[in-house]
Length: 382
Image 1 (cartoon, rainbow, N blue to C red):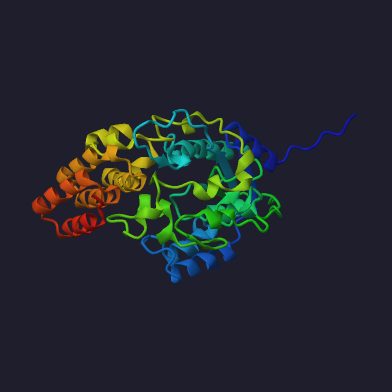
Image 2 (cartoon, rainbow, N blue to C red; image 1 turned 90 degrees about the vertical axis):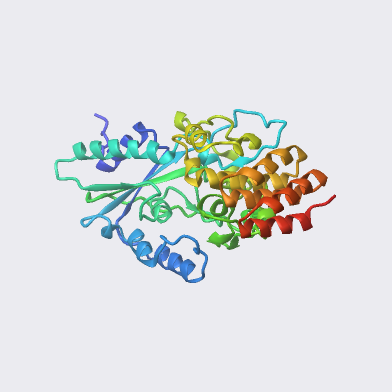
């Protein structure tokens, strides 16, 4: 009689993960991630996390010590879900922008948390003992990349993303901390070698050294997390990105052979791969909520998105945008949008742009907007 391999608890856990649609799963211990803790605290002290007031040393310590998140933690189940999808719309003839691929579909937090909730329910039924567990996506204090690396899901890229052999860096990470004693997987021995393409291609030089990002220079931070005005010196470097940025992933050689996602929720909605920018400047608050319902893009709020659209239009330089920017400069309810519309008009230049700027200079009462208008008039070309 042929010997049958015993089906282990770890095998059962990985089967559950696959049945729930996760593409990658690995297991590691609940021991602290000391290297991750030290590196993150250094980033804070170096000023590379400025602007993220919630990212404190206390949070970093909690994120790297699973037993501070679950008292009797013994293991961490690390999961990856592929979000790499194909564009489904062609670039329009009117000025269009770019949105990071992870935001093309539904809000991944909701999609993944639903799967994790079911995962934990099935975990409770897997063993006779009392199972305690707590799950995370990326909106809680958990070092997801350190867990993914140590569990063998992938390795650190020099852009700080986790790279995987099958899906490149196009994966969402999730973790379940549990009191179950599980056999840990072995970390991968892969590295990026001598490749520095992501560092060389970053237009804002945000990757200041391998594995180190200056958050204040990152286009993703500037378009999503930053509230208020974008520093003038950074605007020309941001290209046509209006939400997030994929440049360091697009140029990564590991991503060339990445498999496409089979998760319906992550397929492109609307025109999110190449959004028509001009209509976005006209959105009301209600229109914004309707269009971006259940989308990660809602994080930037309407004002943030319209600010980003102005910057993108200024960088694109298409004169089709002048009337829309002129209306935004004259009537937008946010001074942030008005000031960025002024900057964009200055970048596009020409007599029509200058007329809008001169008219707004006489009507505007906000000092910061007036200052932007004056600079734009100087920058504007006849």
